[in-house]
Image (cartoon, rainbow, N blue to C red; front, side, top):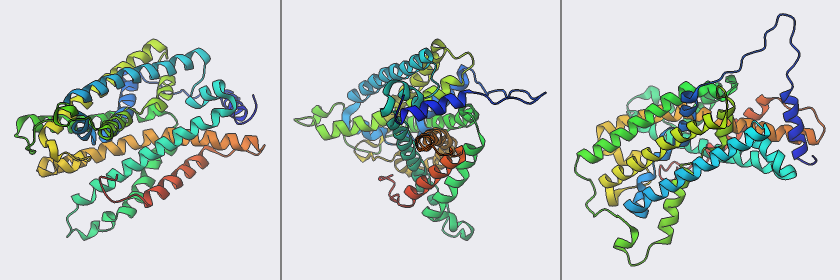
Length: 371
């Protein structure tokens, strides 16, 4: 093949050839996980450490109690199908990544596949750290002078993003984040259970009637509200970029085994989304905002939940940066092979990734709603 796709395929073929081993040297064993471990990684990718839950009550407010579960169920079926389709193609053609599949089927047009993954994941990482910076400063008491530096949004963002890049540089496989995914999923579950129990056990804060369907209270359905809720729900299902790395790290990777991982993960996600979205909206009703963390600040326990969400976000961040760095490295290697220059090291891609991420964060709006 020629064009950008050619160097990408050539680079992939080079990576598939293992270097010769010295006498007595053993081939390093690749880390592989069972179905449970793979399900933790994929579930954490979908839930995003709880960040996908923050705006779901607003989606319920906009599209109603009936339409929101319907959209979620359609998203569940669509996500299961697209993820399984990726697995079938990767298994049939022996390609280990999204970028490699793009090279095989798109040729010269394959360059935009890793570009889209990098842009998507960097955007998610910026959202992670932006929420992180909104959550942490209110936990500090103004009199705590030792923590004054960390209360600065810019300093906090740069400091935390630098620390979170350490596991990305040291872990060689996505399976190295399984324990972080377990911790993050547990944090998201605590957040969901608290929000649901609080909403169902206490009187609602809002006073308006529940919006069962937009047409119930308006003569015409608001198109803008519908598409706004649709975008919130759709973005909460972004996970396809990590499906193939998780599949390739599975013990005895077969489409049937990965199908179980997909169904388990998507089933957890859809039940969590519907349950939490309906419960939180039923509590706040017309007072529902796009930031559930702020909504729950009316209770002391809600303030403690900020720490739970922070832990979940920290555990999730490397999962997104890892794949973004890998695809950015693919882009850089492809460009340099096109120019017939020496390839850069993988560390260069992660470094560029870090610079782009930090540059974006410095100009992130301090408003939680904008985040």
